[in-house]
Length: 168
Length: 439
Image (cartoon, rainbow over all chains, first blue to last red; front, side, top):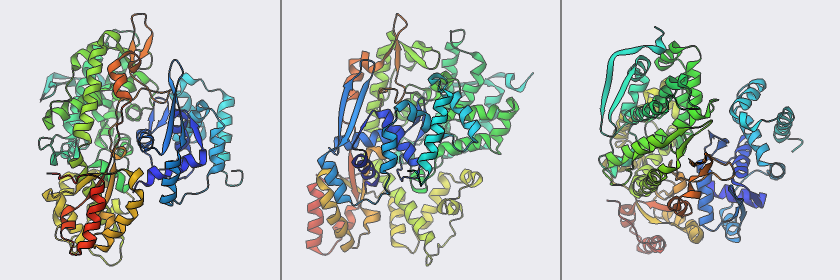
């Protein structure tokens, strides 16, 4: 019952706070690809992997008072910050959820920009292809972002570090 | 003449209650409709279990797919000779529109949740795999099937083409809102599509709406909002979905246990139970087959499977109360135990269903490039996000749109003989609110 909600609340207990819905979307997707058992269904959207289920679940958690959402007006768009509330912490305590330790991964993800995480998430989305084709696909579907070679190399290294059980 | 350019000797039409007529002139489209993988969609209902609530909702994925094709056909004919539109993409758009739901299975939402499947994966497999559909598409040109698959997966290079099939105001949504309203018989879900089609403009990488058409789009957003609450989130439909999911869980559990033998081997389900579904097996399972097994399972030895199937087939659904996880988490554990003590297996008979478990979304503006919103093109050619310009859309964008319901079989509770136990269960459940009858 509500296991998937509890997993997200637990994520915020690890991450403390996340700024930006896009960043949040990409963080959960990347963690999923690193075998952290989040179950939100993702599809490819205009800005890369996106989960409607995640959006709605976050909204539910805010409505339940387990997460606190702060909206900032950035003239062209709104930016949202999320953090866990004391009710959220109580819920989690009662739930007794069993999740792997992924604090280091979360810290790594939080330290990077949403633009970079969009690149990493998109590369993960095409990870069934050989690396050269993945890069070509990313350049096709993300033509507007104009990712540089350096950014792509950085993303490859970042993915390897995330997956490496020794360095993370 | 090349296959891709071949036209039928005269235009064929399908009579359609929503769009009046669906027009087909391209040979390729005609052949795709005749393919077995497309005909299979006749045997899969568009709205799954909704017909248990709205008895008219018997329409199929076949109807809807033709409708989406027709809308895209009309949009494209409006786009001809407009800037940013490349008419070379016409056939690709039409094929993608027609085939976008090809991978849906029977009651696909429940099947996907229980068996961890993804209908979009199967759509891709049918298009690029060894199928009649693939043969037809490859006759257009080598690699054409992959292009169609990419458009549907939203990974095609031309985003304008993608946005016709999937965006916040796409042909898919415009068809299903009107079609579902028509077949359920509700009075919501109607909007002036002709007007929206007239004010749609192709831009470099998306379809936008001429600002003078904003009110028609407001109407579309409002009907979407009302359809979600009145039809898609309907608690009775959700009750049937809950039972359906539990049947699938139970059948899988029994299949995996060493000491249970089905009276009739569940041949069509085996690959689903074992998590190794091949395309050929996936295509064989349609709603008639599922109903056939549910009919048989009403006579199985297992009490739970038998009871759940009997409930589903005879519409003896679970009752529900509103559930607030924030207030009732502590009582949840007690309730779970009480159900066990009463001999009612809580894994199958005590179910929380949340709005996020449903496969429909509201309009949300895109925040900081999280997802693409609806854009209005202003007289000075600048783009403005819809909710920034429309008070109506802005007002419903910020509303609370979530709920959680607790489903259970009230008849089983009524039959509990231990009065003290029954009283405590009822006390907790009624503490959640009034018990709602689903009739």
